[in-house]
Amino acid sequence: MALALLLTGCPLTDHYQLLQELPAGEDHGGSSGSHAGERSVSDAGESSLGGAPSSASGGGGSPAPTAGSSGCAKACNAGRSCLSNRCEGGWVRMASPPLTIAARSKSASVAIGKSVFIWGGLDNNGVALGNGAIYQPSTDSWKPLPMDPGSPPARIMATAVWTGNPSNKVIVYGGTDATGSNVFHDGAVYDILGNSWAPLPPSPSTSRRSAPFGYWDGSRAVFFGGLNAMPAVVIGADRFDLQKWSTSTTSGDPGLLGFSAIAFDGTVMYLQGGVIGSTRQDKVYAYTSSTDKWATLSQGPSARTGAFGAWDGTQFLVWGGQDGFGLCGDGKTMSGMAWSDMSSPSTLSARRIGFRRSGWAFQVSPGVIGIFGGQTSIDDASITSGTLATDGATYAVQTGEWSANSEWTSRESHEYGIGVWTGEEFVLWGGRDQNVSTLTGERWAP
Image (cartoon, rainbow, N blue to C red):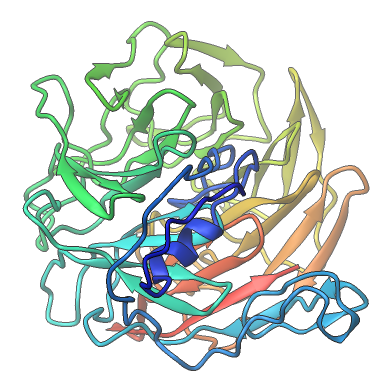
């Protein structure tokens, strides 16, 4: 990164460390469940970064090895050794955040470069929170987010979208109050480089949305679906281009479709399955926000809800979920208009995504998908019941090979916690374990 610093005797701040982690021209995947295709932050240009350093580090992490140390040509994130020019994979524990960051569930989160943005959520006293932090795996450290007049009001189940290059902002939108009875259609924009907030402009056309799917299409943030206060599924998408709001077309829109498999390829959002009313679907929809057009594609694996969806770089993958007979342990990949069966895993039990509760899927590398967590039993028809998994696997699309990943270190459920793929590591933090919010976090790398 070309970053000219006009140093005036001031120490480098944690904000400078964050800027170092945001290289230009790389695709780091995403979040809010994992938004594949989100863009990277641009070079910062000439900056004068002064002021006192932030006391953001939670401690407990080992320093990242420097490039060239011990014969290694690669700098590894904190807690990972480098052997034969390769950073050690598997699970490592995360340092706890500073005392100002309480344990929480139901937060908004998104990858920003190789770091993770976390905001809001519900504490152990049932109070909605209006603060957050940025976590940096490279140093295993935390940088609290500022609270200023432009910050969003406290809320849970909001969605965060990173704009990437060149605007370098995070948009926090929607969510509810602590009771879930008041659903919001407002939010705020966090300026990464300026370390400040500004409220989103109001719009009478936007819908109230709790936990919508969100992504950046290169020009605008798109917030699709989610729930309102009834609760019921919200139709269509609201779109924000950093200046004004617009609403997606109703022509070809899937309507009141909820709990579908979903993925974004950088241009198109894909949906498969889901439920309308009480009927499971097997239709496939594709939405291109740049042209504001919907298309209906070929049918997928079968009618199901809560399936894992991901984009592997060239194909849309759908696996697991729940049909009329129980949990599913199969899936398919779609290339163009053709579907191909996935091999049956011997390493991963049948499971579904519990809506914002557990279950994450993301592209690990071209042609390789990671699937973690999810609900592995069904106590009743509710998506908020059943046993939550603490393991996962990766799937290589071309070879059909599954590779098991061991249980994460803490074996806590991280119910309603955040799970974000940064392009290098899967960061799993917070949420609830046995109905108590936790500060525990862990990171996985291949």
